Length: 430
Image: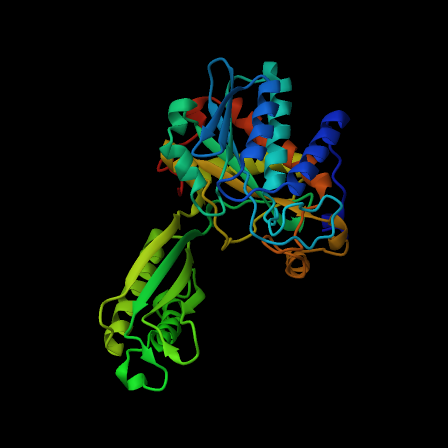
């Protein structure tokens, strides 16, 4: 591999006026982030853009969701998806177009996702005479709380727009702009968020013998929960269990009645997922019983997002056409990604394949000396990651590559016959 391979600047063949407009739109979206379920300004911009390009537009799906449909006769239906919501993070990037909303930031890059899909919609609409079939573009709310995709499906998304033959999309990441990350099979982890409420008997801190202390119970339960992955999940399987919050008590000398744990679980297979969730139920019940709790604990599932499992039969041809965008050797296997995405729900609801890839967004100059994947991984480890107050993708060439990747992948499947898109279970690993 030639020295500086990952730092080579991408050269896009895009209309300069469109690039400038997309850059302006991206900066505007970044400066005006909206939290999950409140993406109405962003949705308005999206709807206006799509109408301008000749799409049939459906608004207010599952909240602020927007879908556009562009039909060019008989042929496959391809769905491209972007999410729109921001995070409750105070921005510290120092960008001239930094967030103007206190405590809210596009720390995960969804503003980049929206911008790239708007550009792809414009490019595909401009070249509509060159393809056949139906293009569906979906701009989804509330991904960060794992609810938006299901909300859109439950609100009749596929009664409003045609069911697709394949779902395509991308997520920006701190790998070098000019590279894409794609793997067949399990790619993004499932995510389960749980609230465990432990019940005790409150009283004075000077008389613990007259109480059942839920703070101590929360502590012992937390320690025991962290044995699940190390002792109940096989070494060649993957899972993550995190106790992210312990909430209990109001004053040093008061033993409270209850304590609350907030848990995050990530996994890639339903077998491992079920084993971990079952272990949580077993452990919290046993610890409460051992402590003499007056009643069993409750375990509530607050969020449940399935793993993103890229269809193997669809991933390989998609990888080949994506290489035509960024060059041979630049579509890399990123390994299993412990982050989660609810985009898979859109494919599951239609019973069709999904191919979802990473879009490099880090400054290529950071990787000037990288000659191997090991070196690129070391550089990435030192860069701000998604959800960091310092995270932001470089606008160019990320926008141009993101648009080109979506357009090229969509054109491949639009130009194919419906039978060429294999459904889950027809020889794939989905």
